[in-house]
Image 1: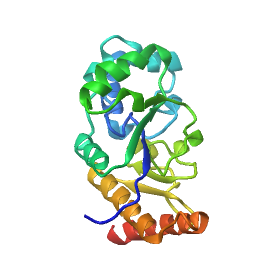
Image 2: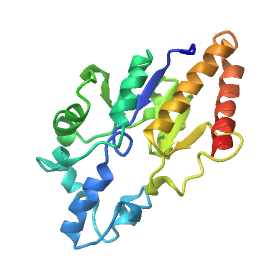
Image 3: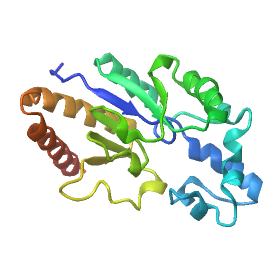
Image 4: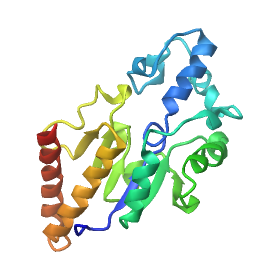
Length: 219
């Protein structure tokens, strides 16, 4: 096994480890008489996805008793989260949830899907740029602006974002949990090899650029 730096990794819940949009679309289709799919949900702004409907109307399914029990896992998320933990990384789960749905989201859904997660490693936070971590895995481009390597799981609602483009970007777009794991594993190995604790600023951003070049070269 190659040597790695032990990292602090923050992971989003919705559409990162569980398929919120898929469950949400099924409910809004019944409510509004639509025939949408996940691929039709191409904007982060709810008013653009559901014109003519209020925020409270759109968000209402998430507040219903029982909704979160029907939300399914992103394929292989559990396998690679366990592997990251086994590698010695500290994994925290950061999500933005209304108070009314927090208990159901965590206890009816998340901990049922991922029973190996310590609930003390779960937090409710709306401004994730405040978090101090090495890696942030999140489908929301606005959550990937902090001083960390950002990994953005590809979703229709973030494909219009160019946050992962350009020479100064510190965000990598990923298409599976296997790919997310390999990015983090390679990043941890690279940081270990560079002994970046001695020259944090320069080697940190060198590492981000290295990772982007490595992933683009494979794609």
